[in-house]
Image (cartoon, rainbow over all chains, first blue to last red; front, side, top):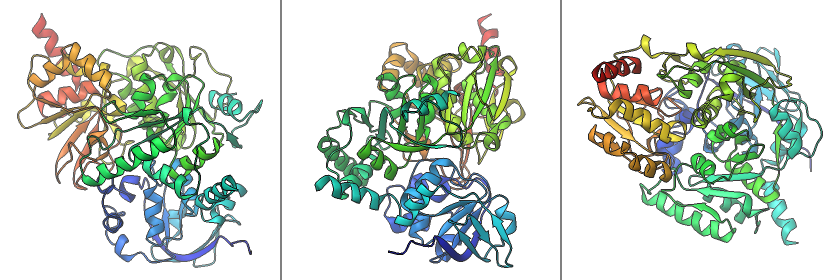
Length: 170
Length: 408
């Protein structure tokens, strides 16, 4: 099987600093049906996001993206809405671990939020560790270690758990 | 090595590790609460994993949605109970025992030098005991339970050296809020905070728990009080900060971010609709005693709702025994059963648009406690009690001073 490229092209939604897990997945709706929960993603900062975001879009943000809770619904809601990945100047650690665990690509890229215009089409490449803007300029990013890239290439930890389950049965 | 490096090396079966390395380590303890336990165990079941690595190391505490506020929560918890039995997890604490982090400490399920992971961001709390601990998500927890291992990036360490002792009107909450401002996520993100110095050595456990608990709010991976904290560690340290505790004053975090901190004295007079004293950050007996110091024999302002949530059943009983609950009820408080309740906007004290709440909890993000148009302020139990008394944000020194005059 060909190794997935881990290269993505899409339309950027540019957000600010400190996008919290409460903004991504408000605790108040944690026990509501999925459709309700998805409607409220980022509504406080981008009321047009949940309705407007399309498959393959990319979230671009400033510092400390995903700060707050350990709730995995935060990256999962973005993935469920079709987001291809998140590029931020920095991530809260539990969010980035959770994103990798569920198969949502994340990339740290200094000053990204001031370089990308909202709605601009950009490319990011996890293996190369770079972002390519619409005007062709390239921004160096922090490359994830190979083990994390392998998890993302598999689509997250669930397929790894299934392998463990199969090996336990045989 | 720093304390984080020492413990990660030990648990990864290595003689030495350096910051920046990735290691696979074997945690000593794993904990889940009611929001995620069913998801984690269901994922294992669906993956065909019929047993977990070591059920004796695993604890489940029901604390977030207890007693179940909805049929959905009740169903979710019922499913979790079935799976907890199936996977042989005996350290299971039903709703009412307390908030998970407090229960872990009270039950002795965490020891100094342990490596602990749990499905809750405030898992950094155990750093107060010298345990190296951090939150993880439910999918990673499923992997960790199946294999008994998890990967960690060895973090850089920031030394926070504490000198002297604080005044009677401040506590650990004021220290950590103050650090939010001076250190903040710019320096602490993904790093380990290591608290040392005479001020750290003399600090009571309750305050250490508050500080370690909120370390995660500045993005810290760990927030550690190593066992030998009177002397400087060997490092290496990415940054070093020094703080004179005697200069601390009551602090408050303003909406909508925890790093938006200032002295209470600069923001006095803001009208509050609700005051909340509780949570894994500040729901301990020492916190309830602080509330009693200010509210005993008095009554809260007529337009304010005061919600008090002891962090565990043990604390509840102790507060009952000491007459604290009697005093707080007389003062006009609602006493809730032990649990996470309003802190995360789950239930038992949500806010309407345009309402303001001052709480002793840990996060004031927009939308955390109900309406997106509500405002959340964070402060110490003393500041919270003083604010409930006056109905407006109040520096506890004003009220404590007044009560001494009355006594004289």
